[in-house]
Amino acid sequence: MKHLLISADCHAGATIDMYGEYVSASYQNAFKEWRERFVNPLKGSGNPERARNWDSEFRNTQLEADGIVAEVIFPNTIPPFAPKSLITAAGVFIPPVNDLDYLFRLEGLRAHNRWLTDFCSIHPNRRRGLPQVLLNNLDDTIKDLELAAENGHTGFLLPLIPPDAGIPGLFDPIYDRIWEVAQDLDLTITQHSGAGTPNYGKTPSARLLFLKEAAYFSQRHLGHMILSGVFERFPKLRYVMTEQDASWVIKDLEHMDEYHMWMMHGVIPQLGSIEEHLPNKPSEYFQQNVWLGASFPTPTEAESMKTIGPDKILWGSDYPHREGTYPYTREHLRRSFHDWEEPNLKKIFCENASSVYRIDLEPLRALADRVGPTVEEIQVPLDKIPEDTMSVAFIRP
Image (tube, rainbow, N blue to C red; front, side, top):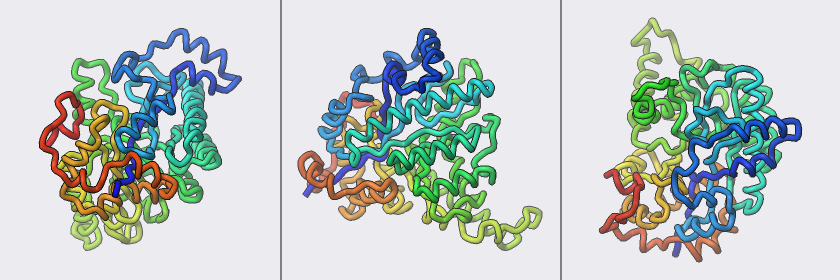
């Protein structure tokens, strides 16, 4: 018996020149001018096998060797008209300089989305792409969501909003238009870590501060969505927080439930009543609407996932990033999940992702039977860490 593995956190993207083929005709001249000036800040970084971002069969070969048969795809390369300050492609929000800059940036993301649709169509049941949207003009956002659904996508990548972004936070009712469309179109809202921090400027410590605080500025969106009543008003929404660990959620929900209890019982009367706004406990909305894309969890994180509940977790490898588990996914699974019961592993390995992103498992079973890890091998504790790994999954306890 073999496990069917779906990675709910993988990354892909085209080269700049490939993206150029997807830029609208009216932007082609501007793209050529931008292309001549552009210097990719990520060029030469990461694994030299960069082609696995866009080479479909090369990619499948590596994923299959790692035991993975389907994936949820986040961006991983720089889109056209990107600002020079862009250091990550996964759901980053950098405020446009002006209206014209916004239009170019929007066209760049749309070029990525067009490429992504084609890339996913090569293997439609093995790939679930997450088209990107901006939130500066909600009419544009809605058009992009409608197009995403029309093109067969089942989710989208919502940018994390820094506190100095110049647009309202996700707690603002202005976004109810977006939540309503996402709910009606059955699109899963997904956010990825690595963005949402303030602008630290060009100070020597800027990148260290980014590393230190990126997790917090990603995770705070959970409270924004729950406490603002988004899930009370739109109870059928699905919201996934990816590559943001898991254990922090336990305390975060405890704190929100405590604040909710205080307000329900008038402990802090100056804060007013919360009953009409948020009749249920925050943890109940989490159970109703939220999932965690728990990428490359360590044994400690995996233990916390038992408390959160296996129904709420989607496992991810973070392929092709160096901090992810490739090419040692089997070893990672043995290290973190050897003492788990098989029914719960099935939930986090494939069943939850199947439900959240509408992936049909039946066509994947034959491939999983050929390349997937066996139930028995995952039950064997790992006795030796791979010497050449740089994955967080092996470095942390």
